[in-house]
Image 1 (spheres, helix red, strand yellow):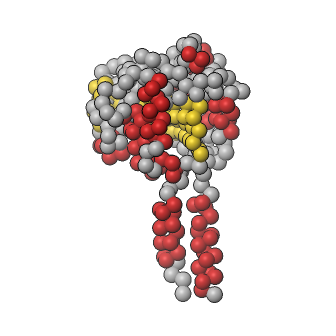
Image 2 (image 1 turned 120 degrees about the vertical axis):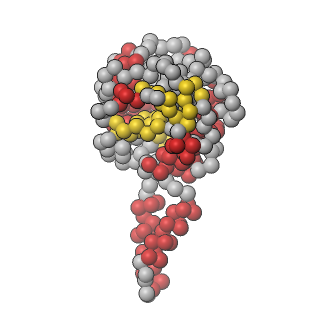
Image 3 (image 1 turned 180 degrees about the horizontal axis):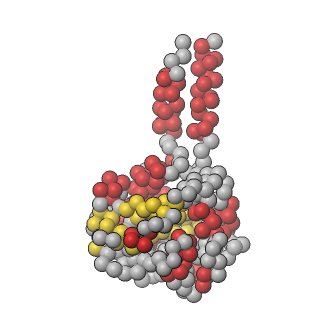
Length: 289
């Protein structure tokens, strides 16, 4: 009888843990070549996907490239729509630093209600590296019309929001040293202007700072959606086709951020060993006789 009760309790405790599922997508399409080279993007995608602990966070990992990103009928747009309000917190990474029309239609066609804004407001996560977030695309190998600063301002719903160049002599802060240990001081060409987020619908977590400039940083929506609390991270927004240091922080740093910080502060899977240890400790604490 005792074995039967123990087995039943194990099954019940495991159910909510095993039901967790999260998906990851990359957009690694054509780059703005002055900011990040195509070869660097490919290497960074590989570095992220093979970083220890990343694979365990996700049920599936997909990579969308050129031809996958044009308009609402594209594979990338369909992925975003299918992963909006699906009850799980999913992640998309724009590794090339560009924002294709599948995410946000050019010339700010939909200033409210774009696919990426809907995805984030539902409670999902967008991570951007390299170029100014939501600014423009190079899909098809040709520069799109620019959304300009209005792209980010519309997605964040902060009038006049800018990632324009300022001092940007970034040094890792305590969060950076703890969660992104590979991070070093660098020059950010498109830093966060932290003073613009005061009184907004977002809480900022900073990993590198220079006065009111920050990079990397993540904005967390104060209001949760069906999928969780939406997050937007912009990281290493710097004009460096090839990162001067090895390894390229734009790959390994994103991996560190995801495993060390995002997994702790979002709703993500943990590795099977941790699941079993957690479940067994809960069974023991039940003190079954």
